[in-house]
Structure formats: C-alpha cells, structure tokens
Length: 275
Ligand SMILES: NC(=O)c1ccc[n+]([C@@H]2O[C@H](COP(=O)([O-])OP(=O)(O)OC[C@H]3O[C@@H](n4cnc5c(N)ncnc54)[C@H](OP(=O)(O)O)[C@@H]3O)[C@@H](O)[C@H]2O)c1
Image (cartoon, rainbow, N blue to C red):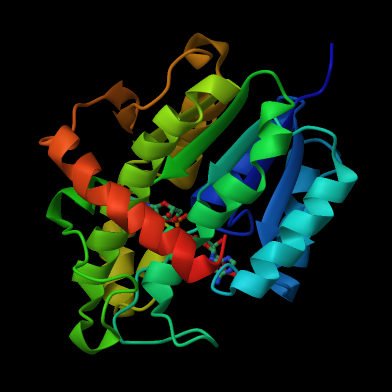
C-alpha cells in the first residue's frame, strides 16, 4: 500500500499536534508546517515518540509572512511528487492589533491569507495525488463574521473578536470557492469547526479564562480524531464543498449570496498576494 502524505499547519501545538500524532500512528507520512522554534523541534520529537517512533518532517514557516510561505511551498514542491492531504489548521485569536512586515493585520494574514496561498501554491501536488484533499479548520464563530469592505481590511477598524470571526468566514468561503474551482482537478475541499477545545488558542486571554475553559471543554485528542477523520477518511473521498460542525455537515445560511460577494474578494486577494 502506498503511504499517503499529509501536510498540517500548526502541527506544533493544540489540535494540530494531536492530529499529527493521530495521523502518524495511522501510518500517514506527516509533514508539519510550524514556526522555526524550539517548541516546533520539541513537538516533532513528541509526535515521533507518541506515534511509536514514526518519522515525521518539520518544515519551518512563519504563516504570517508571504515570503516564508513561498519558501516552504518551494521546498514541498521540489521534494514531493504528490501531496494527498493539506490541513490548514493553524490559527490565531488576537486581542490587540499586530501586523506583519507588510503591515497586514495578523489575524487576517494567518487565518485567511496563509491557507489561501497554501491551497493555491500546492494545487499541482494535490492534483498529482489523484484524490487530493484540503481541509480548512474554521470555527463555528464564522457565523458572527462579516465580509470586509476592502482587501486588506482596514487595520484602524481592528477589533480582536470581530477579526477572528471575519477571518473564519473568509476561510470557510474560500473552501467553498475552491471546491468549485478545483472540481475538474479532482481535489476535494471541505471546511470544519473542530469543537471547542482546550488549547493555547486562548493564550492572550487571562489565565483563569483558559483554566476554566479547559475544565469544561473537549481535549485536543478528541478534536484531532474528528479533524483526521474529516480530512482523510475514504468515506469522504468524493465529498467537497461541505462545512462540518465537528463531525456533522451543516448548511451555511445565504451561501449563494456570500459566494457571489466572495468572488471579488478572492480576486482582490490574489491581486494583493501577486498570484
Ligand atoms: N480551540 C478551540 O476551541 C477552537 C475552536 C474553533 C476553531 N479552532 C481553530 O482550530 C485551529 C487550531 O487551534 P488550536 O485550538 O489548536 O490553537 P493553538 O493551540 O493556539 O494552535 C494554533 C497553532 O497555530 C500556529 N500558528 C499561529 N501563528 C502562526 C504563524 N505565524 N506561523 C506558524 N504557525 C502559527 C501555532 O504555532 P505557535 O504555537 O508556534 O504560535 C499553533 O501551532 C485554529 O485555526 C483555531 O482557530 C479552535
């Protein structure tokens, strides 16, 4: 049996790390895309140990920076003949305005621009897989999101929770958009909410918020099983353009209208990124 290759962003923490362990245990060739940090080196060692000594690959990337994403994609495109699964998992929730080296707000850059770029720059390798699949990890909070009136959104209007919800709506709509755009290429694209999970995603909130939530909510391992299932199970080989709330598909209100509005955002985003 051929080993299937899976790329997961944010594989050094939380849901991403737990998903990488789950996939490595199940004999996938796992590539984690994570920052150049000791944390990522330690996470790679932990994933290898927890999965019973399976070798995984760490490709370092700063998902806030286009140049770093281009560099990671160049490595992937030169080292692999095909990629079976891309899981766009990494995400951030900021409380205060921060920007990348190009002046772009970080929530928009990491939660939306990074998956947008990866899904396009790795298209050929996903197509070569014969059954390539992309999973965007969004959030049920997309329901509170609004589409930006300009691309990029105006950083002066930044509000942390709104920026998070808006970015999760954008990444969800990009998944729906690509599902149509990639249908001829036999690449399936789905989006999911992983559940409310005790991870570092609340790292910018006071410690007691995280501690209370951690008592009440799901462990990363449970979310990871769902992410791995939706992303790689053969039962979804021909499922595309769906949104899963944890394990169940759910319809999106006003999807046609949102997709019509998203089409011009998609083209402005390509212009912004120069692709
Ligand atoms: N936890 C929840 O309740 C929940 C609910 C709904 C949706 N989600 C979504 O699930 C996904 C995973 O979140 P999580 O809960 O596992 O949170 P987490 O523990 O904070 O993990 C986030 C991951 O993203 C990575 N990341 C952030 N900025 C990056 C950058 N510039 N470059 C490279 N990697 C970067 C982090 O790496 P570093 O540690 O190096 O920063 C980390 O690996 C996110 O998209 C999140 O929005 C989570």
